[in-house]
Image 1 (tube, protein in one colour):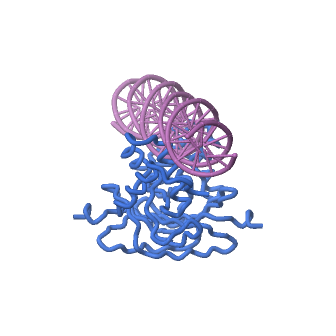
Image 2 (image 1 turned 135 degrees about the vertical axis):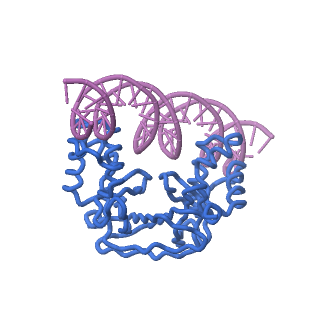
Image 3 (image 1 turned 120 degrees about the horizontal axis):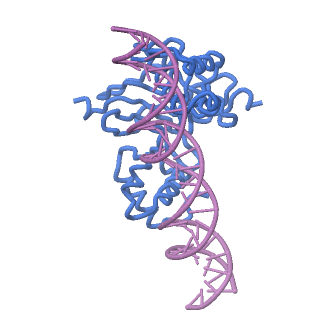
Length: 126
Length: 126
DNA sequence: TTATTAATGCAACTTAGTTGCAAAAATAGA
DNA sequence: TCTATTTTTGCAACTAAGTTGCATTAATAA
C-alpha cells in the first residue's frame, strides 16, 4: 500500500508542502501544477500522501478538499486532532495549534472528528 | 429580508423538517420533492429558511450541504453551537446535544465554528 | 532484456449546486 | 374589482470539483 515509487510528480508535491506552512487546497495545487502534471495525477498523489500519513485532508468552508502537512502522524497512527482555521476574506487556511479531545457520544462509535473555524486572519483584521 | 410569503413550496419543506429529528441533505430533499418542485426552488427555500434562523446548514463528510431544525436560533441570533454526527455506514446525520465553546485564537476573529464527527450510529454498531 | 507492476495522461463523465431569464402567482394600490 | 408591482417558481444551460476507464509510459524485478 501507499507510496511505492518516489517519482518526479510526487516530489513536486512534497516540495510544495515542505515550502508551505499553510494548508493548500486541491484546486490550488491542480492549478499550480497544471503545466507539470495532469489533475488526475495531482488528486492521486494527494490521496497517496494522505494514506502514508504525510499530509492530512480536511474540508474547507465551501466543502472542497484541503491538505496540510502532518506533524505527528504516520501511516498507521493519525493522532493529532486539531481544528483548522479559514479566513473568510483572503481564504488563507491553517492548522491551529490546539489539541482537541475526541468528544464521547453515548451509543456512538466516533472514528474521526473535524473542526473548522471561519473568521478573519491576522492580516485581514488590520 | 427573509421569507416574504409562505407559499405551498415553503410549507412542504417546513413540514418535512417538522416531521424529522434527523438532519437532511439538500440532495435528499431535492430528490424527495422532485415531483412537487424544482431543485432550484428547493435550494432557494433552504437558503431562506437558514436566513430566517429556522434551520441551520452544515457540511457533511462528503462536503455536501446538510440542514437541520434550529432549537435556539432566530434570524438575528444563531447561538447554539453544537457538533454534528454522521454515520459512516448508513449516512444518518444528527445534531448532538453538546454545547461547544467557541475556541479563542489569538490574532484571529472567529465568526463561526463547525464540528463534524464521523463514526457509527447506534443502529450500525449492533 | 524481457516481463511485470506502478504511475501518468487524457477525455469523458458525474454530481452538487448556480445563473439568467421568462412565466406564473401573489399582493398592493387605485 | 382591475391593473401594476413584486415575489416566487420552473427550466435549461452552465460551472466547478472531483472521478473513472483505459491506453501509454516509466520504473523495477526476474
